[in-house]
Structures are given as C-alpha cells and as structure tokens.
Amino acid sequence: MIFIHLLIGILLGKIYGNYIYFIAGSLIPDIDHLYIILKNRLYNIKKIISSIKYEKNYGLKYKTPLIHSILGLVIISSAVFFFNKIGAVYFSLAYFIHLLIDWVDIDEKYYLYPLKIKFKGFLPIWSKQEKILTLLVIILLVIIYIKL
Image (cartoon, rainbow, N blue to C red; front, top):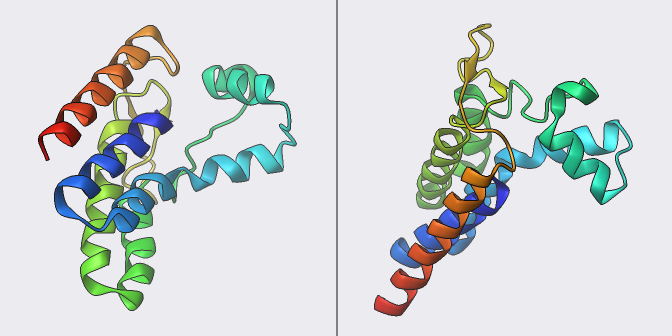
C-alpha cells in the first residue's frame, strides 16, 4: 500500500501543513522494504513486485518487526523530536496512520514487538480491493485539493 501511504502523507500535509513531516512519517516505516530488497538482491522490478505480493513463496517478510511496530514508531519519532518538536508530532501521527493502514494487509506484523504477538489482516497485497482503495484515496485527495 505504498501509494496509499504517500497519498495519505500528501493529504495530511495539505490539511495541516508541514508536508515534509507527514510524507516522511507516511513513508519511513517502509524503509525496511529497501533493506529486504538489497539483502536479497531483488534488483528486477518484476521480481520485487512478485516477492512483495507473494512473500511466503520467496520466504521473505517485507515488514520487519522493529520498524513496523509501536517501538519503531517511538524510536524513530524520538530522533525526529531532536530536530523539530512540532514536526515530530506530525511525523508520529503519519507513522501511526501508516501502521493502521498496514493492519488490513494479509501479511504478518508484530506491532507490539518485542512481544511475539502476530497481527494479520484480510486484504491480499496488490489485490483488486487494494487498487480500488487506492483509487478512492486519489479521488478524495483531488476533492480536498479542489476545495482547499
């Protein structure tokens, strides 16, 4: 749902200002995806998309326990806090919304890391439903941009 995360960051930035913190908070939690791609040498775009969609077939987990957890939110937001206290609030809000959006994905997440409690959604990654949801968020964004 990387596109939805970006769109939500833009949307929040439009409504509240501070695009940079909202967009960064929306996208930074997926930095672990880059780690998985580089670690497993997935340099072909088709292979990357396939491995994201069918993680189990590749033996991968794109959402690492630390980054996609409340602990990760606290650690990374604390680092932002040292640079800009208000920006850290915006960043943290966007990061938390990212985690909430990821909740519906079918892959396993460990939001309470280091506890071994798994969270699993119902929506297949890159599914038709996810694409429709992305389109709806785009429409919402266009409507808000026109009104604001």
